[in-house]
Image 1 (spheres, helix red, strand yellow):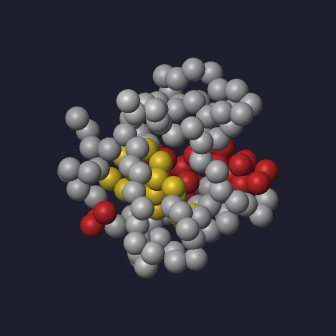
Image 2 (cartoon, one colour):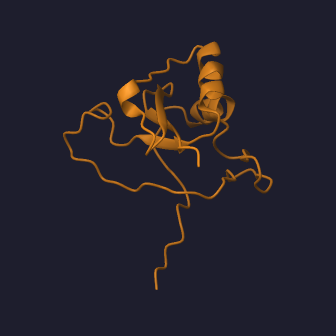
Length: 128
């Protein structure tokens, strides 16, 4: 028997939790009160998401995949990556893309940072 069914929450420290929550809701549709297409209606505490894969992977302490001053990096599964990136850029959010991040086997990636400098990897799975 495997008792764990999935991720129940993502919690991290913030110098201004209300402002940071508002940023995630506005720019990414993430957080309390948000619902992904095809899911149940959100409530004041939860974010309704679509089912799918979650990578749970510790990285080496000296990884350079994200800034060494941060303990974690969020990876958000997205659809319509190009449209999301255009929206983020229009809102003044810096977006980083690199050809070497993308592959037909794993999909496409982009990176943004929230107002507190936390890395957010946006991942669009390969079509199929």
